[in-house]
Length: 228
Image (tube, rainbow, N blue to C red; front, side):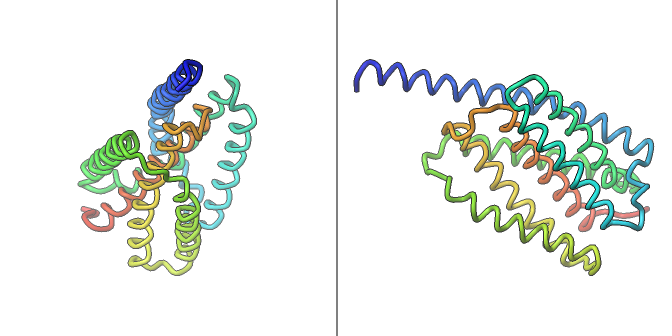
């Protein structure tokens, strides 16, 4: 190997580690507005405005989310991108307040939220360790994960009308698997240099973590929750 190749390879490795460190730091920071948003959302019953109108809630929340995604991508190379990302995580906290409020209305709600948080943390640590050790190229996983994501989305929308508990359980379980795999896929992309912008990398990992937490909490509420 030529000396120039060694220097170039070392530089690439340093850049990837920098992106990974910045991603982890921004991900940790993004949890603060999420918690604040969830707390305010529960206190003010923000999601109550959509009571009995789940389809409208889905459309409005998706529309606002897509607007945030567009803005974050457009300004990803500037401080505005970071601010938009933090703004989105606050909005995501407001969205989260619906299920958190439902959980807190149960006698074991605090325990369920703690279990979901702990389970999500365990998944994140496991996927991080796996992504840093495996040498296999996971780029081909993307298309299959996207298919799984579409299936989850279609089934979730269909269940707005069907209201089938069994389908909800199946969707939640599938979402945990799909978004855990997405977490591995996104982390490996950063490590391999496939994603070089830490703002976009943080958004991807945040969405993975967020959806694993929500799906795990839904599953725990369905299996062990009570209204006493």
